[in-house]
Length: 141
Image (cartoon, rainbow, N blue to C red):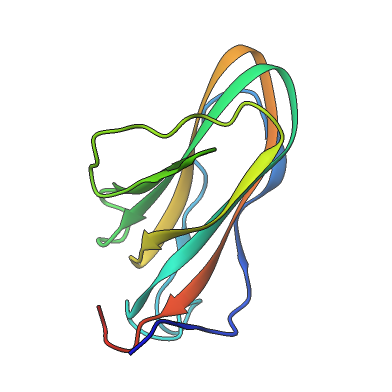
C-alpha cells in the first residue's frame, strides 16, 4: 500500500523566532490520543523555513526523538539547506546561511520529538520555524 497523507494539522515544532545561540527546544508529545492518530504507523514530514538572517550565521536543525519518556534522546534527522542526514549517515548537511527553506524531510516517529539548533558564524541571528505533518503508512513500516 502507499503512504497516505492524513488531514492532520501541521504542528509547530518550533514557532518562527530569532535565535542567536544554539539551543534545545521543548518536546512535543506525539502519542496516540495526543497528536498522532495511530501508534507509530508512519512518519513526520518536516519543513524548515529560514525567513531572516543578520551577521554571518550558520544553522543546522536536529530533530531528536525519544521512546522512553525523555530519559534519552536520539537523532531522528539533521536538516540543512541541501537536505537531511538520517540514521547515522556519515555526511553532514550544508548549514542554512541565508533565507531559504526545505520541505517534507521524512523523520521517524517516536512518542516525543524536539528540535535542537546548531548555530555558528559571526554575530549570528537567524529567524526560522520548524513544522511537521504526520503521514500514515497503513503497512506499519
